[in-house]
Amino acid sequence: MSRWQPIKSAPKDRRLLLFGLMCQHEGLRIDGPEVFTGYWDNIDSAWCGSGSTVEGPFYVPTHWRPLPDPPRRTAP
Image 1 (cartoon, rainbow, N blue to C red):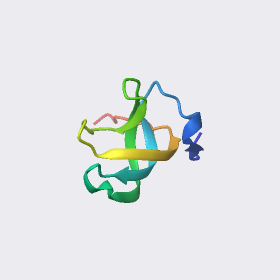
Image 2: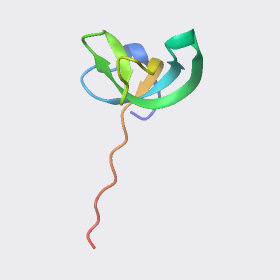
Image 3: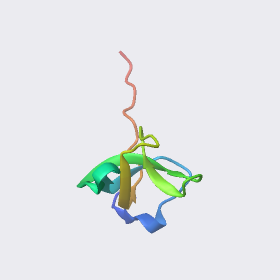
């Protein structure tokens, strides 16, 4: 699957490539849209960006796709 899918169909058991808006909590500024990696947080029932903290940044994804395979290691 290589096309962007609606966020409602996203699996919640792995990190994904996400597309959506980034919202700053203080001042309610909205930036974006952006592509970022993230995961579903069961405690907060929300999508979180990789590297986010409880202070943000906060993301509102609209679409997802699987992370690409990492590069293969080649023999010297």
